[in-house]
Structures are given as C-alpha cells and as structure tokens.
Amino acid sequence: MSHRNDRSLRVGALARVEGEGAMHVRVDGATVTDVQLRIYEPPRFFEAFLRGRGHLEPPDITARICGICPVAYQMSACLAIEDACDVRVSEPVAELRRLLYCGEWVASHALHVYLLHAPDFLGYPGVVEMARAHRDAVERGLALKKAGNAILELVGGRAIHPVNIRVGGFYHAPSPDELRALARDTLRPALDHALATVDWVAGFPFPDFTIDHELLALTDPDRYPIDRGEPRTSAGRSFRVRDFEHHIVETQAAHSTALHAALAGAGKYLTGPLARYTLNHAALSPPARRAAAAAGLGERCDNPFRSIVVRAVEMVYALDEALRIIDAYEPPAPPHLAVPPRTGIGYGATEAPRGTLFHRYEIDAAGTIVSARIVPPTAQNQPSIEDDLRRYVQDRLDLDDERLTSQCEQAIRNYDPCISCATHFLDLTVERR
Image (cartoon, rainbow, N blue to C red):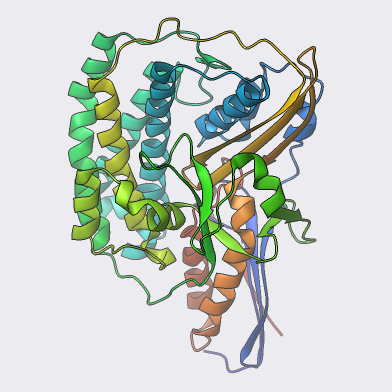
C-alpha cells in the first residue's frame, strides 16, 4: 500500500458491462475529489436517424440501439406512437407484449447475474474461470438465458432485434399450443432455476453500503411494472409519462458522450431494480414475494450490491408472470390494429431491465416523424453511479490501488450499465502522482 497523498485510479475499459466506458477516480490526500464514469463510445444519433422517417418505423429502428434489451426500445416506441395517434391496443395484444417483455427480463437478468456479476462476488476474473468450480451454476444461468430467448423467439420472431413487433401489435400471434409447449418444456423448469438462483445469490458476501438517492420507477396499481405504468419516486413525487420531460432535466457532461439526467429541483436519482423493488415489492407475485423474503429483502433495498438479489427475484416474477399469461392466453384477433397517422405528440415509458426508458415522438399529418427523444436508464443513472463510487472509495482509501480499482469496477457493475451491447476484457492502468 502506498501512502502517497495523491492517487489517480483509472480503468481504461470497463469489463463485463454492455458497451465501452472507462472509470477515473482522483484522490487528493484523504479526500476523493473527482469521480468520472467516462462513456466514450461514439454518439449513435438514433434520435436524428428517426427524424423524417415514417411513424411505423421506430420499433425496427430503435431495436438496434441495444442487442441486450431491444424489446424495451420497441415497446416504448410503440406506446409513444400509438399515444400520438390516439390508438389503444386490445388487452390480448397488451398481454402478448407483456409476455415478450418477460422474456427480455429473464434473458437480460440471467446474463447479468451469472455471466457478468457473479464472478465478482466469488472472486473470479470472469465466468470462464468461475465455471471450472461452479459448472452447475453456470449451466443453470445458461438455461435461464435460453428460456428468456425462447420467449423472444416464439413471440418476437427472433431473440436479438425481434422482427414480429409492429406499431399496433404483432404481425403474427403464436398459437395456444405453441405457448403451452413452451411453458411445459422450458418455462416451468426455468422457474425452478430462478428460485434456485435467488437462494444462490442471497448467500454472496455483500459490502455494507447504502445509497441515499431518490429512487424512480414506473408504478402500476394492478401489477409489478414492466410494460406500462406512471413514474413515481421514493420521495412521493408522481407524474404522468407525458410530463416526464418537465420533471427530468438532461445536461451534457464533458467526460461522457451520454447525457446526464436529474430530477428538476432535486438532483440525481436512481432508476432500475432497486427502485422498482422498493416502490413495487407489494405487487410481486406470491412466489416472488416468498423468494424475496427468504433472501432477506425487506420492504426496500438500498444496497446496490444486493441488486443482484433483486434481479434474481425479478426473474422469478417474470417467469411466473409468463406462465400466468400463457395459461389465460387466447390469440388476439386481429393481431394488430391499424394506426393511421395524425398530427400529434406521443409519449411512452416502460421498465427496461436496467430501469425506466422514456420515448417521445412528434409526427405530422402525413405520418412523418418531426422530432424524437429517447432517455435510456443508464444515462439517467450516471450521476448517481459517480456519487456512489465517490462515497465507496472514500471509505476504502486504506486499500492498495489494485484492490481498490477492482472493487470500483465491481461497484459499477452493480448497476449493469448498458453502454451499448458489447463486452470485452479489461485494459487496466493505475496512475499515481
């Protein structure tokens, strides 16, 4: 351990996160003076791509924003365009959408829990090394990922960038026999795997660390929010989706190509599993509530390291919810409604695996998109991640640079930041002055 007063910790490329980002922590004496989560992946200009396109195109275009959570972008886009055109889909279509979204939650959470984050808690540099000692666990995680993909493939047409989604519904609805076979052969065994996952991750060693940010998530009086809801915060704020832009302010940070977000008049906040659970735990299904209680989760969870437990509980919920939807399923007829264009502005928000995702589109009478705005969860969380990292490092300045840097990376992975959709190994540099 060096006792130099000035320290600078740098991670040139974060590993086991989706996308390209870096970390920079500056310590002067006994004080952490600067923390930056540097998202340096080039801007992708999706909002600009959407301008001038037809109003039925956003689901196919925005799906390409992320290969991990394309359904989140497709569903939020559909809701916003349908809102602008004053169209409400039938309940059978809405339920089929929710089923599709359940598949994405399972696939994304399984990827994060098993392949990206569990190695941190068990002391391995990656899942390949972890698999040598925990083969059964890794195989369980892969089975869960496969189950999520199976829903995406059957309902969405394929697992990555699904092609069966359209504004107004679906091009094709699966048959009851197809869904029943999926439930019997894949989803019911996967539910057992998800319950085992909760037990497994609940035994991980969790640092004693809590957040103090306001939490934001969608809430739905009828069920745990996935595909719909209205924004609410842990401080009691609530507003309509169409008022999102009045309450959420985005600003540019020089060190990041992604915008930072804040609650108007209140500052940083956090969205994602901790927020969803804290604001909606009572709406979990009975199996998920029992699993949460057995894992030691109370009425709220404010330790970001325990977010891996919340994700496991949400996998239980998503699989249980998928089975419920399939059990009551009748194919929507027709599988989609016509959505004729009209002049208007529409708003849509859903709960992506990583948090609340907001879309807004303005279209003209011919159906041409005049403007678009997309606010992803990782951009919303950046200021809170940086603040958490500052406090986390401040309490651990007695660690040497290598251990401190490693723990900082683990702390960032708590939030499963989806910078885009790529993962790669770490190029690490530690600089001291």
